[in-house]
Length: 235
Length: 323
Image (cartoon, rainbow over all chains, first blue to last red):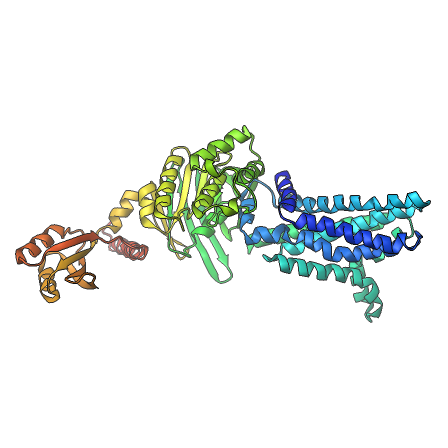
């Protein structure tokens, strides 16, 4: 598993993909941060910034995850991984953790934006930390979604586009749900609505149920990815 | 060393592998022969744990691939049909990755160097795999299989797409490797298994057709000889002479290649060598010089037809109570 993790991490920086992801992330996030927080001269608009950041994830995270499994399948290197003495779970986890590491590190660097705020005033530290944690966890769940969709196809393009679709849908549920006339459908969709669980974080509190929810969402999609491989062997 | 037991794999309505049973002894080089689409790759993919069988089981060194996949996979070095190479890595990086992936505990760089020397890729050690020629890529694939010194090596059509010189090199390499490893070599080229293998398992349309020592199989299918003769002279006259040679079953005209000679395909009766009588008959005629004579290789299809008909003959023999 560690070998796969290491190779995956390296390959982000052999190809331009890793650089594009980090660069775009920091650039767009920096601009958003400036427009919503610095220019507005207030930390009240923080939630707005984090909401924009999540929207940005919908495009950027699929970029990070599209290659993970689709490319191995296309180039048949999957056969090497599947016939090596490594479990399927180990292989999938190695890939997931590699993408998560790139995402996490970029996110961490991005968090230095907030240090700027302390130079100019006394921002609400609790609000910032709660939001950072919440957004990070949502992103981690999105990485798992991208990983899962990458396991379903040989084409990176299809993986990326479908991931964008699913992630955007998960973000939009909160805004669309009120228009759905069926209560049962509403409650089912609500389960996938990541933004609903984000409310406590924007109210500056750590919500354990929400943390568990995001973690299990990530775990669910990693598990589904393992199942895809299990299932394919029997097909 | 390797036991395959009543293995069946069904894809939808298609039985890709149908109740195949065979085993490979330690130190043996086994040729796994069959035409394209016979189920060779599927069998090997199941044996290496890439696919699961619909029924039946595979054991490598006594370890069942389904019950204890990690331990079984540790025993196998596998070169799939398409070498599983990461095109954006250098040979060195790639082999180090494979080394880590297999969780080897040997002196790393020395071990990798050793394997590179065995397959002769030392001179491209620091080059990016995507830029290498097909022959080199294939050899990197073989090096990958050798990493960690697994007791069992499985090569799925290792010589496809290589030039004749590279094919000979790879065959020699496999012969050398056979001194230390148990090898399964899958191919659809008969001379290849004849050259390298101790035993041949033939499958066709998912079913086992033959499982024999190489010598036995070759004599079993070698009974009928087809010759291609190039003879100068008028076609009708030559045909008349040829048809009168004792032991000749049929003669076909293959066509004119040169201005004055014609090629003929001559099929002889079973287990009769007609080369000498042919020569005497032609020289007796006085004006029909033989300028070329070669044996024709049996195609795989010919072998199947022969093997299947031999099986039927054997079956009939048993029914008649003769055997």
